Length: 81
Image (cartoon, rainbow, N blue to C red; front, side, top):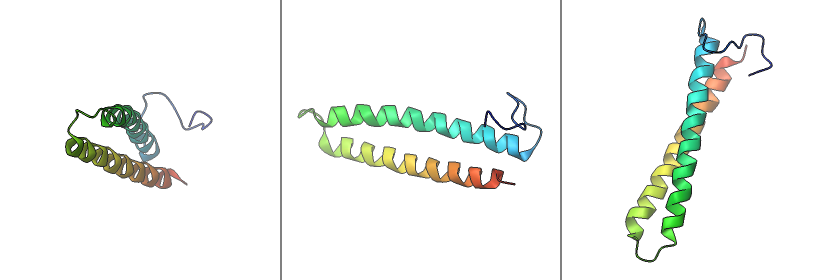
């Protein structure tokens, strides 16, 4: 992205720039979810925690990560000229 001549910070004149901005937001969400996932795994080691609730949350984090990864891949493909 930084080596592309089309990339300009905070400028979205065409589809390529909009797709890049959305893709960057998706990667920030993935980072957020990975920190949440790490916290869930730490709580899973605690014997007093509700195992079923934590298991469902871990499944939710996994599903969100896969969904966002697929969207980011599709955006990357749509940016190809």
